[in-house]
Amino acid sequence: MNKKISYILVLFTAIISMGVCAKAFVPTDKLSAVTTAPPAQTKPVMETPSSEQEHQGKAPAGQVYQVRLVDPLAVVKHPANYLNKRINVVARFDKFATLGLDYKPAMRSSETYISFLIMRTDTDKNIPLPEMKLFLKRTDAEKLIDLKENDKVQFSGVVFSNALGDVWVDVDKLSKVKK
Picture (tube, rainbow, N blue to C red):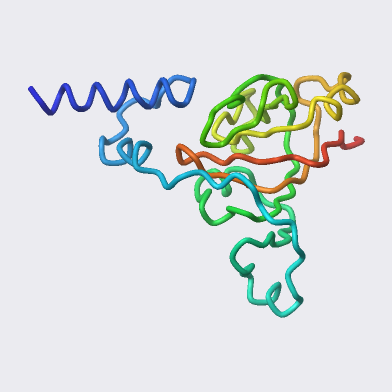
């Protein structure tokens, strides 16, 4: 009985914290990681690593490391591996949203930022990827008001947090890819 109650509480917590429907039949040991995730990192230091460090594939603590194009699903699968690293992504645009804004451990104010969603890269169906929280300054987003669902976009930004086991990215460049 206690095991059932525990499972229901963990499932409820996952649904509320993610803001989307939880996946069915997820083992409780994987859901419990949500509540024990490491504290969010909120302010990356924007420094360029030396070429020697680039060749080693690691950035010193507190520094941002340049990464070439990455698959967003790979980043979502291992968010801690990309913490304080710059990522460049090409994906299909879904929509502008308010997902993840004003969440204190990874604070981005809804007054200054807007978030946006991209589509999953492992399917041709229109399924968003809400595990990747993408934040863009509202002033930059206003210039991209003509973006439509399924437009191919490219963006770059720094993964500043892995709160809730998700990827939280400060996007500094977003553009539509010409066909």
